[in-house]
Length: 366
Image (tube, rainbow, N blue to C red; front, side, top):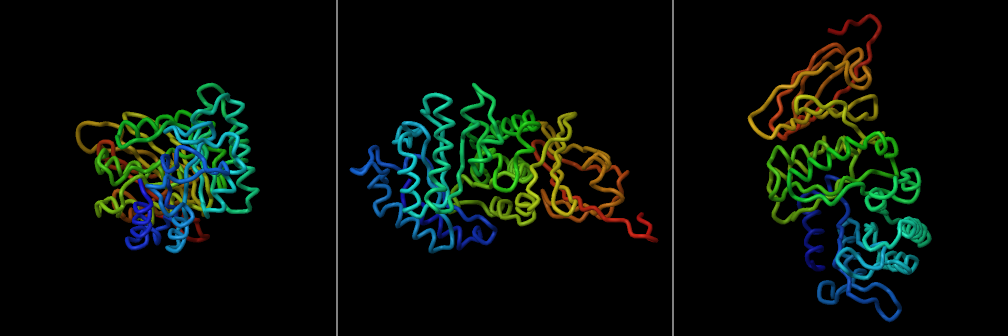
């Protein structure tokens, strides 16, 4: 972890098309700080890892047309034991603003009581706004609150721009699977609150690392698009495979993820180790994902009626279907009583976009 690493990542984001694809933040996580504050009680970077300081790093990132994210904690110490922001919310917010920071990931370790946790997240939100600088506020408020108290998502969205609900993701299929299971189990309480200005965050994309098969990488990208998740990559862009780069920069998938309607998708059904997910999109379109949860064997077919989608409206009276993943393919015109059959690899996903066609007077739809 060093300023050179983040400068290199910023360079690669520009030279290798990441910025053009829409990725714009270079984010520092825990362990960037010195173990003590300075003489004015301000946070300070580790002098060996960040000898030029965070302001200089922010200037460099900004010179590339990108933005800088940083990490802090609501409690006395960060999760790795560095100084927390408890008692210093106003000072730390102003420090980040003075440095030119554009995003704050605010963790929830060592928070004390639940009331202090909530108070800390509220206070940092107010302190960030008070600086006058536009800083995206990424919270872990519900993650730490949920084991003991039901989160108030209306309040959380009032203060935070996105928020973690579930444990840290890691580079393994079991972690992706657990995140999807938790999300589907709690979708009745978390889906409706999501929208422009505030998003559920299922944690980072681990595509381009070592733990996921290709089909599992497709699944994470497809389902994160369905869930309207912030697309934050945890990988080394200097050594990523062309295949993973193609997936992460896929403009059709990113367009679904960033759809301006801003509605989060949800799981429609789970049967025979298949899951069917849908997400309403702008213009009356829908994104549909078919996930094969079986972990052995070969590809399996799954059939479903198009009348099942969008409460019967997604393909009424007719629609055009495009396959987005695993490869772009035009599936042509269908009507609302059609049955669709897809073949899906184990732990893989087929991602579709369904665009409704309005019936015109005097025209028959076949």
